[in-house]
Length: 317
Image (cartoon, rainbow, N blue to C red; front, top):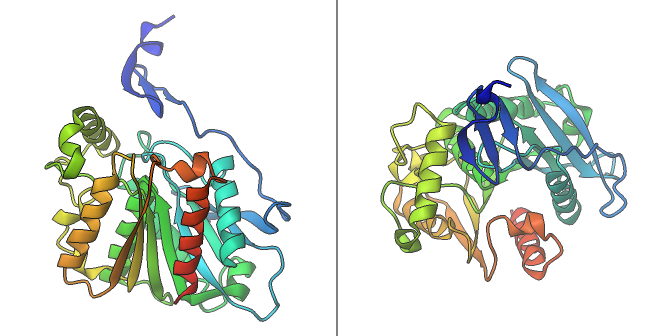
């Protein structure tokens, strides 16, 4: 046996390992939950769509099982987390979470399957996400390829959201919507859950967590080999000259007390409020919880409280 097939070149356990022969082993987030026309727990339905063949981009669309024939519902575009390297919209965690959000908020959601590193390093995920948003926007006139979006999506009430790396993507897409425009879409707000932001200079408790700092720095260079470092505007919003051009009017940032990214979430609020952006940003902190706890323990009290907050944020437009 070729030793390169067993020798590890990059080890980001518990997420991913890359071996010297180039093969990639994703350690979690590889399962597949099929779409369903009737989720018995939430009365939500879902179906899968192909957005682009080249590059390969797809999505899962979620909606309440029953929608009045002439009713339009707010539209959420969701970007999953996983450090840009693992997970998809089709794993059980994300499938179940989007079912819950759609049911509780009475909305339609498009959960985007973007290309992941290391096979497709950044900015591939950002480009695929923008491709997805343009595809979604193509339905604003009622002539897109997906009839559910044509008939029932309210493009005057659009939201972006994501967790961890997906929270980073949602932020980047709001910047892009503000700088380039997204025809036919009114972006009301964004919801960033435990977003993966970082920077060369530590903030808050990051000064004490040398191991976490090294992990975040190394992971960023792994997923974005062309980066100049952790102050890359794709990772550190404080270094982005376009921060004040966010294309939404409000945002909700969710952080968790025991998450190593918590202080970065609070810092994000600070730098956004100091920018030229004229919107309103609110932070919700879950006490005694860790990173993306709501995916691992969706029925806990804090997960329910966060879901209720997100529902309220979307409903109060």
